[in-house]
Length: 163
Image (cartoon, rainbow, N blue to C red; front, top):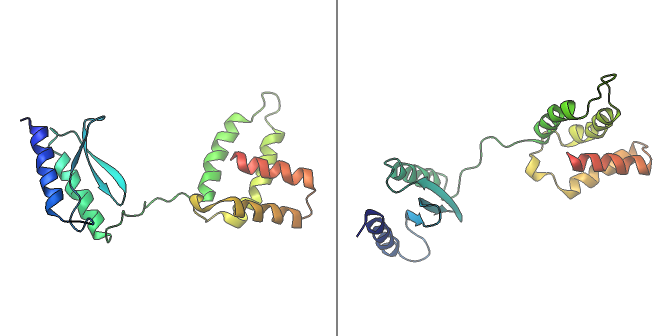
């Protein structure tokens, strides 16, 4: 019996010893396709490394300890990106992409600036994952309330969608 097979048998024994409904600690498993060991925490697979890697078991224990410390939930990502940061990253790209060789000015870049202004004012501090269709409708209504005409509002909303 190889070391991998022994380890799989040990993890199966451990899994059955913990009882039903996952009251115990999730066991380390072997993923055949990638050849790595992994553990499933809160429905998400966390890969720990190859079976012969000495750090695999350490990464497993660390992941389980953090999961248990967070109340059997995966810890939140510390760096949640905001709408303002997305705008900043897009702007760095846009300054390179939307430029003209002759005068250095570009009308499209100026239109993006005007379209992104209400987005930044209303939802700049909001996490980007929470920005959805309702927020886009609120921005569109803000533009309409500002007196912008319908075709211009539609173009600006499409620019925001593009970002």
